[in-house]
Image 1 (cartoon, one colour):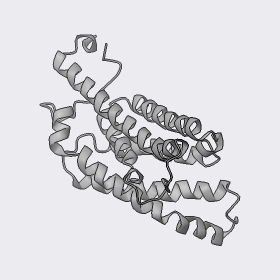
Image 2 (cartoon, one colour; image 1 turned 135 degrees about the vertical axis):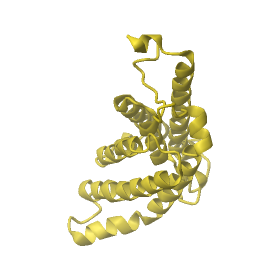
Image 3 (cartoon, helix red, strand yellow; image 1 turned 90 degrees about the horizontal axis):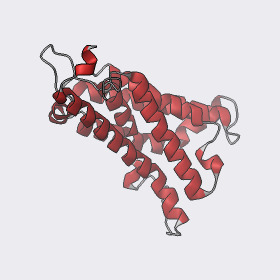
Amino acid sequence: MSQAFESPVKRTHHLRVWLVVGACLIYCVLLRVLPYALTAMGAQNDWFSQNFPWSLTPILAVGMLSGALFSNRFAAAGLMLGALVASDVGIWLASGHIDWAFYPGTPFNYLCLLATILLGYALRNDRSWIKPIGMGVLASVLYFVVSNFGSWLTLQEYTKDISGLIQCYISALPFFRNLLAGTCLGTVVLFCPLLLNAIAPIEDNGQLEQSDPSTAR
């Protein structure tokens, strides 16, 4: 019953969390779809090169932020899953190839990205850069290992032996470099103590004021 009489200040903080996390996810969706959209519009360039700024995606940092700020992890997971599906549908519509968006390794990618919410949950009362950056590095390494294991397991271009697995990981190193850079940069920005204090201040009891959709009415 006490949740029904939530203070206007808390409601404001909950709205801020939804707006910030939602805006970050929209940004990540646009980054992912952009090279396919440019190619569909006839712009001549290697838009999928790792030299373009959009290859520095902060999606793992956004996942950790969701876990840190939402008290309801199912809501955070639903928001993240919705953004992932939206980006894949965008790729499908822009390219005209459903297999470019939804391929056999897609579940591995989704699983890794949803797991970042659990890492973020461990940061819910943290107000420093050190632990979030460490978690960001861990998230990047886990994503690299698991997602590329899924690629090796599901793609026909790699032989199903140790040499094929090594080849798969070596081929993915340029992507890992940019993923790690984008995650660390995104973590530094999103987990800035000043920004976090503005979005979800620490309550008097030392607990982070988190967003719970069941109380936002």
